[in-house]
Length: 179
Image (cartoon, rainbow, N blue to C red; front, side, top):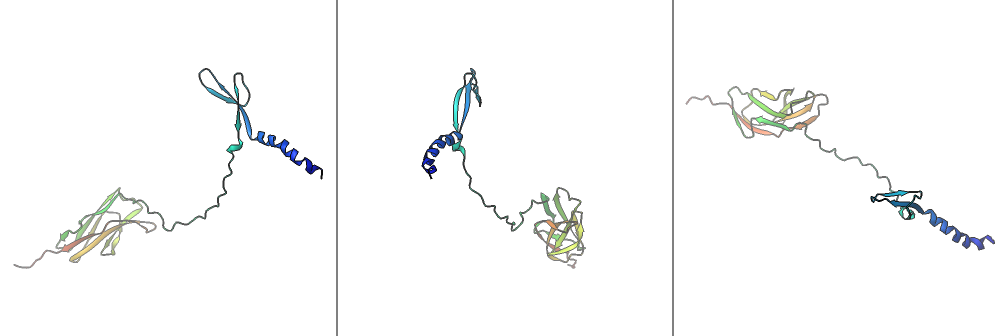
């Protein structure tokens, strides 16, 4: 138990050694042009600089890894085509044709990619088969009001990639009555 009597003296002797471990000695020299050089060995004309490294130690808090959350909805993708619209007939147009035929002209930029096709929807239903041409010839259309839109479809997956704004137009056959 006599060793316990010496314990405070041992701590006092070790304290300067612990303090010295937190200090680094460097040597600084400034030449005639004002260029500053630091080195860990003394060189002629250098000054001793003591740097306390103990104050630079910071314990960072431990961070819990966050659970990866699945996105609720995928981010909306950029449109494939910068211009994609029904150019003719225009919204509110009245189309008059005795045969009952109407041609829809689609504006699309850049050109339709080989892996894509266009599908016409007329009055909410697919009309005809998907095609590569930006022209749709609708035959024997009934007189009245119609709503058209066109969808870009991926050939392989059938996924709908982009849709035009809907266009409403009226179709009329010319009157043939005698006057």
